[in-house]
Length: 282
Ligand SMILES: C[S@@+](CC[C@H](N)C(=O)[O-])C[C@H]1O[C@@H](n2cnc3c(N)ncnc32)[C@H](O)[C@@H]1O
Image (cartoon, rainbow, N blue to C red; front, side, top):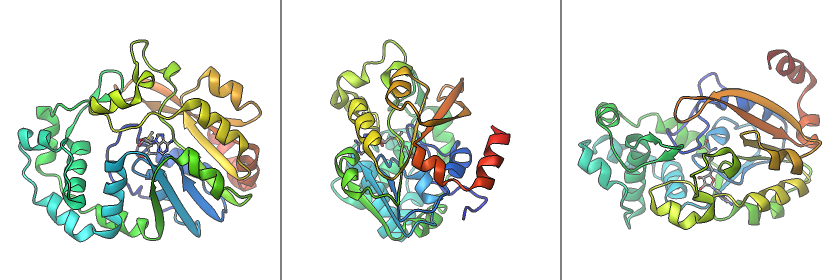
Protein backbone atom coordinates (compact mmCIF):
# COMPACT_ATOMS: atom_id res chain seq x y z
CA UNK A 1 0.00 0.00 0.00
CA UNK A 2 2.76 2.47 0.88
CA UNK A 3 6.02 2.66 -1.00
CA UNK A 4 9.20 3.15 1.03
CA UNK A 5 9.96 6.51 -0.51
CA UNK A 6 7.74 9.45 0.43
CA UNK A 7 6.52 11.22 -2.69
CA UNK A 8 6.07 14.97 -2.18
CA UNK A 9 6.14 18.24 -4.03
CA UNK A 10 8.33 20.09 -1.57
CA UNK A 11 8.37 22.69 1.17
CA UNK A 12 5.13 24.24 2.33
CA UNK A 13 3.92 26.11 5.39
CA UNK A 14 2.62 23.41 7.74
CA UNK A 15 3.53 20.78 5.13
CA UNK A 16 3.85 17.23 6.41
CA UNK A 17 6.79 15.94 4.35
CA UNK A 18 8.95 15.23 7.41
CA UNK A 19 6.09 13.69 9.39
CA UNK A 20 4.45 11.73 6.57
CA UNK A 21 6.10 8.44 7.43
CA UNK A 22 4.75 8.63 11.00
CA UNK A 23 1.25 9.81 10.07
CA UNK A 24 0.61 7.46 7.15
CA UNK A 25 0.07 4.27 9.23
CA UNK A 26 -3.00 5.91 10.82
CA UNK A 27 -4.47 6.64 7.40
CA UNK A 28 -3.89 3.22 5.92
CA UNK A 29 -7.39 1.90 6.21
CA UNK A 30 -9.97 0.77 3.72
CA UNK A 31 -12.24 3.54 2.53
CA UNK A 32 -14.51 4.41 -0.37
CA UNK A 33 -13.24 8.00 -0.56
CA UNK A 34 -10.13 9.62 0.89
CA UNK A 35 -10.41 13.37 1.37
CA UNK A 36 -8.13 16.18 2.49
CA UNK A 37 -10.39 19.16 3.14
CA UNK A 38 -7.27 21.33 3.77
CA UNK A 39 -5.00 20.01 1.08
CA UNK A 40 -1.96 22.32 1.00
CA UNK A 41 0.42 20.33 -1.19
CA UNK A 42 -1.49 17.10 -0.48
CA UNK A 43 1.53 15.26 0.91
CA UNK A 44 -0.41 12.48 2.63
CA UNK A 45 -2.80 11.95 -0.27
CA UNK A 46 0.15 11.53 -2.64
CA UNK A 47 1.24 8.53 -0.60
CA UNK A 48 -2.20 6.95 -0.15
CA UNK A 49 -3.22 5.60 -3.48
CA UNK A 50 -5.24 2.61 -2.22
CA UNK A 51 -8.48 4.60 -2.04
CA UNK A 52 -10.74 4.15 -5.07
CA UNK A 53 -11.58 7.87 -4.98
CA UNK A 54 -9.44 10.72 -3.66
CA UNK A 55 -10.09 14.43 -3.38
CA UNK A 56 -8.71 17.60 -1.85
CA UNK A 57 -9.95 21.14 -1.18
CA UNK A 58 -7.77 24.21 -0.93
CA UNK A 59 -8.67 27.87 -0.38
CA UNK A 60 -5.42 29.27 -1.74
CA UNK A 61 -5.74 29.78 -5.49
CA UNK A 62 -1.98 29.53 -6.12
CA UNK A 63 -1.58 26.34 -4.11
CA UNK A 64 -4.54 24.76 -5.87
CA UNK A 65 -3.24 25.85 -9.27
CA UNK A 66 0.19 24.33 -8.60
CA UNK A 67 -1.40 20.96 -7.85
CA UNK A 68 -3.61 21.13 -10.94
CA UNK A 69 -0.71 22.10 -13.21
CA UNK A 70 1.41 19.21 -11.92
CA UNK A 71 -1.49 16.80 -12.47
CA UNK A 72 -2.47 18.05 -15.93
CA UNK A 73 0.52 19.84 -17.40
CA UNK A 74 3.61 18.26 -15.86
CA UNK A 75 5.85 18.17 -18.93
CA UNK A 76 5.59 21.92 -19.58
CA UNK A 77 5.81 22.80 -15.90
CA UNK A 78 8.88 20.68 -15.14
CA UNK A 79 10.65 22.03 -18.24
CA UNK A 80 9.81 25.62 -17.22
CA UNK A 81 11.01 25.10 -13.63
CA UNK A 82 14.25 23.47 -14.73
CA UNK A 83 14.95 26.30 -17.19
CA UNK A 84 14.28 29.06 -14.62
CA UNK A 85 16.92 31.64 -13.67
CA UNK A 86 17.90 31.30 -10.00
CA UNK A 87 19.31 34.68 -8.99
CA UNK A 88 17.82 36.07 -5.73
CA UNK A 89 16.04 38.99 -7.43
CA UNK A 90 14.23 36.74 -9.93
CA UNK A 91 13.34 34.29 -7.18
CA UNK A 92 11.93 37.11 -5.06
CA UNK A 93 9.77 38.27 -7.99
CA UNK A 94 8.10 34.86 -8.00
CA UNK A 95 5.85 36.15 -5.20
CA UNK A 96 4.00 38.11 -7.88
CA UNK A 97 1.02 36.18 -9.15
CA UNK A 98 0.95 35.58 -12.92
CA UNK A 99 -2.21 35.56 -15.04
CA UNK A 100 -1.12 32.48 -16.95
CA UNK A 101 -1.74 29.32 -14.81
CA UNK A 102 1.41 27.52 -15.99
CA UNK A 103 3.63 30.54 -15.36
CA UNK A 104 2.01 31.06 -11.96
CA UNK A 105 2.66 27.42 -11.00
CA UNK A 106 6.31 27.85 -12.02
CA UNK A 107 6.66 30.97 -9.89
CA UNK A 108 4.80 29.52 -6.91
CA UNK A 109 6.98 26.43 -6.96
CA UNK A 110 10.03 28.66 -6.63
CA UNK A 111 8.38 30.61 -3.82
CA UNK A 112 8.22 27.44 -1.78
CA UNK A 113 11.77 26.44 -2.69
CA UNK A 114 13.44 29.80 -2.21
CA UNK A 115 11.83 31.55 0.71
CA UNK A 116 12.83 30.97 4.26
CA UNK A 117 10.82 29.85 7.17
CA UNK A 118 11.17 31.37 10.61
CA UNK A 119 10.11 34.13 12.96
CA UNK A 120 7.16 32.39 14.56
CA UNK A 121 6.74 29.73 11.88
CA UNK A 122 5.86 32.25 9.19
CA UNK A 123 7.09 32.11 5.68
CA UNK A 124 8.76 35.33 4.75
CA UNK A 125 9.38 36.79 1.35
CA UNK A 126 13.11 37.11 1.81
CA UNK A 127 15.40 34.90 -0.23
CA UNK A 128 18.49 34.18 1.85
CA UNK A 129 21.85 33.44 0.28
CA UNK A 130 21.65 29.96 1.75
CA UNK A 131 18.29 29.20 0.18
CA UNK A 132 19.15 30.70 -3.18
CA UNK A 133 22.35 28.58 -3.22
CA UNK A 134 20.19 25.51 -2.63
CA UNK A 135 18.08 26.51 -5.62
CA UNK A 136 21.05 26.71 -7.99
CA UNK A 137 21.32 23.02 -8.68
CA UNK A 138 17.71 22.15 -7.94
CA UNK A 139 15.72 20.25 -10.57
CA UNK A 140 12.05 19.41 -10.45
CA UNK A 141 12.16 15.95 -12.01
CA UNK A 142 10.64 14.40 -8.87
CA UNK A 143 7.37 16.03 -9.99
CA UNK A 144 6.90 13.22 -12.53
CA UNK A 145 6.18 10.85 -9.65
CA UNK A 146 3.85 13.44 -8.12
CA UNK A 147 2.06 13.75 -11.47
CA UNK A 148 1.47 9.98 -11.50
CA UNK A 149 0.10 10.00 -7.96
CA UNK A 150 -2.28 12.89 -8.73
CA UNK A 151 -3.99 11.11 -11.60
CA UNK A 152 -7.68 10.69 -10.78
CA UNK A 153 -7.55 13.01 -7.76
CA UNK A 154 -10.35 15.60 -7.72
CA UNK A 155 -8.81 18.91 -6.66
CA UNK A 156 -11.28 21.59 -5.69
CA UNK A 157 -10.63 25.26 -5.13
CA UNK A 158 -12.85 26.12 -2.18
CA UNK A 159 -13.72 25.76 1.44
CA UNK A 160 -13.32 22.17 2.57
CA UNK A 161 -15.33 22.81 5.72
CA UNK A 162 -18.29 23.91 3.65
CA UNK A 163 -18.19 21.12 1.07
CA UNK A 164 -16.91 18.04 2.87
CA UNK A 165 -20.10 17.20 4.80
CA UNK A 166 -21.84 16.53 1.46
CA UNK A 167 -19.22 13.88 0.59
CA UNK A 168 -19.21 12.24 4.01
CA UNK A 169 -20.46 8.65 4.29
CA UNK A 170 -19.73 5.76 6.65
CA UNK A 171 -17.07 4.62 4.20
CA UNK A 172 -15.08 7.85 3.85
CA UNK A 173 -11.77 8.74 5.45
CA UNK A 174 -10.98 12.42 6.02
CA UNK A 175 -7.57 13.77 6.95
CA UNK A 176 -7.88 17.33 8.28
CA UNK A 177 -4.60 19.23 8.43
CA UNK A 178 -5.68 22.74 9.46
CA UNK A 179 -3.46 25.70 10.21
CA UNK A 180 -2.42 25.63 13.85
CA UNK A 181 -4.74 26.80 16.58
CA UNK A 182 -3.68 30.25 17.70
CA UNK A 183 -3.29 29.13 21.31
CA UNK A 184 -0.17 27.16 20.31
CA UNK A 185 1.45 30.09 18.52
CA UNK A 186 3.51 32.90 20.01
CA UNK A 187 1.61 35.57 21.95
CA UNK A 188 2.40 38.21 19.32
CA UNK A 189 0.96 36.16 16.48
CA UNK A 190 -2.22 37.81 15.28
CA UNK A 191 -2.76 35.88 12.05
CA UNK A 192 -6.11 34.54 13.19
CA UNK A 193 -7.45 38.03 13.88
CA UNK A 194 -7.20 39.10 10.24
CA UNK A 195 -6.67 36.16 7.89
CA UNK A 196 -6.70 38.31 4.74
CA UNK A 197 -4.05 40.70 6.06
CA UNK A 198 -1.83 37.78 7.00
CA UNK A 199 -1.95 36.53 3.42
CA UNK A 200 -0.66 39.82 2.10
CA UNK A 201 2.36 39.38 4.35
CA UNK A 202 3.41 36.64 2.01
CA UNK A 203 2.03 33.69 3.83
CA UNK A 204 0.79 30.70 1.97
CA UNK A 205 -1.87 29.41 4.20
CA UNK A 206 -5.41 30.61 4.65
CA UNK A 207 -6.28 30.52 8.32
CA UNK A 208 -8.64 27.73 9.26
CA UNK A 209 -11.77 28.78 11.11
CA UNK A 210 -11.13 26.65 14.20
CA UNK A 211 -14.65 26.75 15.67
CA UNK A 212 -16.16 25.61 12.38
CA UNK A 213 -13.49 22.94 12.03
CA UNK A 214 -14.33 21.44 15.43
CA UNK A 215 -18.05 21.56 14.71
CA UNK A 216 -17.63 19.88 11.28
CA UNK A 217 -15.27 17.09 12.38
CA UNK A 218 -17.50 16.24 15.34
CA UNK A 219 -20.45 15.60 13.02
CA UNK A 220 -18.68 13.35 10.46
CA UNK A 221 -20.07 9.87 9.94
CA UNK A 222 -16.88 8.59 8.31
CA UNK A 223 -13.42 8.10 9.78
CA UNK A 224 -11.61 11.33 10.69
CA UNK A 225 -7.98 12.04 11.54
CA UNK A 226 -7.06 15.60 12.58
CA UNK A 227 -3.47 16.93 12.84
CA UNK A 228 -2.34 19.69 15.16
CA UNK A 229 -0.35 20.64 18.23
CA UNK A 230 -1.88 19.65 21.59
CA UNK A 231 -4.27 22.34 22.80
CA UNK A 232 -7.14 22.67 25.25
CA UNK A 233 -9.73 23.61 22.64
CA UNK A 234 -9.29 20.38 20.66
CA UNK A 235 -9.02 18.34 23.89
CA UNK A 236 -12.37 19.70 24.98
CA UNK A 237 -14.22 19.47 21.65
CA UNK A 238 -12.77 16.08 20.67
CA UNK A 239 -13.27 14.35 23.99
CA UNK A 240 -13.48 10.58 23.53
CA UNK A 241 -11.23 10.59 20.44
CA UNK A 242 -7.96 8.65 20.52
CA UNK A 243 -4.80 10.72 20.42
CA UNK A 244 -1.37 9.79 19.15
CA UNK A 245 1.68 11.97 19.80
CA UNK A 246 4.51 12.26 17.31
CA UNK A 247 7.81 13.89 18.19
CA UNK A 248 8.66 16.58 15.67
CA UNK A 249 10.77 19.69 15.11
CA UNK A 250 9.01 22.95 14.36
CA UNK A 251 10.03 25.47 11.67
CA UNK A 252 12.73 26.88 13.97
CA UNK A 253 14.01 23.33 14.58
CA UNK A 254 12.71 23.32 18.17
CA UNK A 255 11.25 20.03 19.49
CA UNK A 256 7.44 20.00 19.34
CA UNK A 257 4.79 17.36 19.75
CA UNK A 258 2.50 16.89 16.76
CA UNK A 259 -0.76 15.25 17.83
CA UNK A 260 -3.20 13.21 15.79
CA UNK A 261 -6.82 12.96 16.92
CA UNK A 262 -8.68 9.90 15.60
CA UNK A 263 -12.43 9.62 15.95
CA UNK A 264 -13.79 6.24 17.11
CA UNK A 265 -14.59 5.24 13.50
CA UNK A 266 -10.98 5.87 12.40
CA UNK A 267 -9.54 3.99 15.36
CA UNK A 268 -11.90 1.03 14.93
CA UNK A 269 -10.95 0.67 11.28
CA UNK A 270 -7.23 0.31 11.88
CA UNK A 271 -6.31 -3.34 11.40
CA UNK A 272 -5.55 -5.09 14.73
CA UNK A 273 -1.99 -6.02 13.78
CA UNK A 274 -1.32 -2.41 12.87
CA UNK A 275 -2.67 -1.15 16.21
CA UNK A 276 -0.43 -3.54 18.12
CA UNK A 277 2.57 -2.46 16.09
CA UNK A 278 1.76 1.22 16.54
CA UNK A 279 1.11 0.89 20.27
CA UNK A 280 4.41 -0.82 20.87
CA UNK A 281 6.29 1.82 18.87
CA UNK A 282 4.66 4.97 20.31
C1 LIG B 1 -1.22 22.92 7.28
S1 LIG B 1 -1.56 23.27 5.60
C2 LIG B 1 -1.76 21.65 4.88
C3 LIG B 1 -0.42 21.05 4.52
C4 LIG B 1 -0.52 19.74 3.79
N1 LIG B 1 -0.97 18.67 4.65
C5 LIG B 1 0.83 19.39 3.18
O1 LIG B 1 1.49 18.46 3.68
O2 LIG B 1 1.24 20.09 2.25
C6 LIG B 1 -3.22 23.83 5.67
C7 LIG B 1 -3.77 24.25 4.31
O3 LIG B 1 -5.19 24.36 4.42
C8 LIG B 1 -5.64 25.50 3.73
N2 LIG B 1 -6.93 25.80 4.36
C9 LIG B 1 -7.17 26.34 5.57
N3 LIG B 1 -8.50 26.36 5.83
C10 LIG B 1 -9.10 25.79 4.75
C11 LIG B 1 -10.46 25.50 4.42
N4 LIG B 1 -11.46 25.82 5.25
N5 LIG B 1 -10.72 24.91 3.23
C12 LIG B 1 -9.71 24.60 2.37
N6 LIG B 1 -8.41 24.86 2.63
C13 LIG B 1 -8.12 25.44 3.81
C14 LIG B 1 -4.54 26.51 3.89
O4 LIG B 1 -4.55 27.47 2.86
C15 LIG B 1 -3.30 25.61 3.83
O5 LIG B 1 -2.85 25.48 2.50
